Length: 285
Image 1 (cartoon, rainbow, N blue to C red):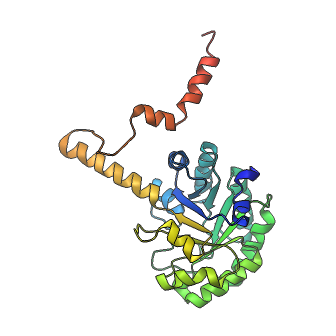
Image 2: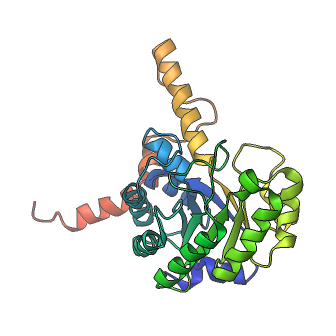
């Protein structure tokens, strides 16, 4: 983990960070290619890429396999969704060890029951705050690199109300959270959260909203903003439109403004490196 790209050091320096969601190595390469300095591995997106809703259907091994491919594909730091840690504090300990070994610079854990569901779906349940404190203690103990961020999320607004969510966030900060993530606030609550908590806060800009800009989120006092749906919705919309065109008109054509041709795509996939290697090691073939 390079010190120059450490998310923790960037936070300590007061840098505001915007992290687009990624769900595989390809989308991670895309966001790195356009210039982002960090990305967020979204559980919603990973589940969708497997053909499932974000409903607690994927295992830790499923998520870990995707995280490993993402970290192998890019140089930018990744904050990775680890859901609830996939069990009790011992499972959390194991999850943190494995995620850190795979290359995550940040690990997000939440206080939902397992199986969990998307934080914007109805029917969520949360565990007792004290049980989550034990899970955070296990995560802190498992962490081998002090530069690894522990991003701790509470979903308690939906189940217990805003005041309880803030109380939990304060408890989680005391237990060792580096970043606090209060999920699914309403617009008024959203503005209040950073001033109520002593640790850096993350906001989930989950839904497309032209008024929810990175600049606006920074003005509210958040340290990080994640946009988990940006690549997922982009892929879905692009695939839908091109597939519809082929089905209805029998042709495959890029819409006006779509930029990638065959050569540009291969460049994104780092083909130049492999061409050089092929030339270097093919002298006697």
